[in-house]
Length: 374
Image (tube, rainbow, N blue to C red; front, side):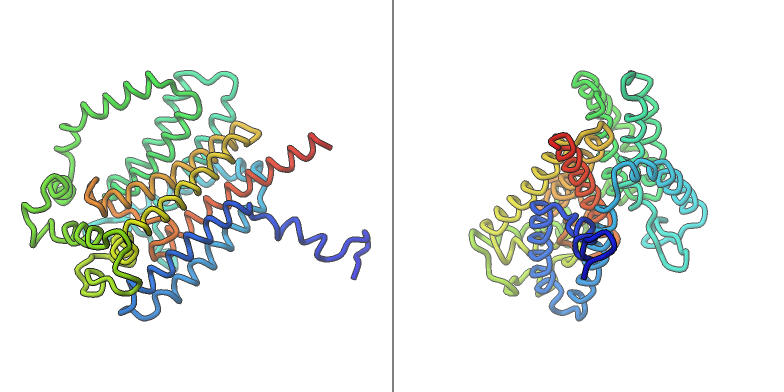
């Protein structure tokens, strides 16, 4: 049935329905499917995990669709409010947040929320907006102000303490600053300064954070205590061999030797059951995800879009690298989920929001390109 302008309902709705970037959507669908299969095995003794994750995925896809329909100009207008609200919520957490496991990370506003998750997206949004505004006269002053904007929320998050999330926020913000034009020499000097400051940082670390570093260096120093979980995780990864033990046949997982096997350590479950071959397939999927994000970055028509897409791509890389690294015993355990595979609603919502931003930028890029061709 046609409308007054002669178009059918589908012709009017199609631009809003078909907003998903096909390559990116296929990669995300593959990762989510692998995640559900692994989660079923990891949580086979925990009823309701897969059903809960399906609801989380539905919510994340809805968020992705809504954001993909937003033009980048709208995202720019939301940058400053999102940053200000995020910092205000972090201050509220510091003043009267909920304490769990010795960390003050949550607020109760009718339901429990973790404001630090918001900053994973709000931080690169804010810095991309700032560099867009400074375009044409970006200099040392611009980089110093950007570093201050980054340091405020990162410091508040690290104080909770939540070094894992603080690191993700820093990496997201630092990628925007680097893509904004920071030279390799300046970056090298910052890295050297950070390395020189490590002894000082050590004195400010909590005991459990020091224990994680020492456990990384020698997990067998306390094999039945602090090193137990990482040792069991490495055993699970190694015992998978080339082809794995088979789906739902992982012994380390089902005998409950692997900690947090549905969330932070789901990669150990996957490795044990699908082996080296499965790990290679999974790494290819993550490389494709990052490649698609960088492709969108390179083709983006504005500085804001390029910086934001590049930061989202770096977030995906950091999530995957840090999670696989900590589960494999390469870096300290910091509590970072495996993107689109670990169970959980908040992190999945943040990752879905990032996917929606990439699709929004790609959609705008196509519109600009088609307009030029026309």
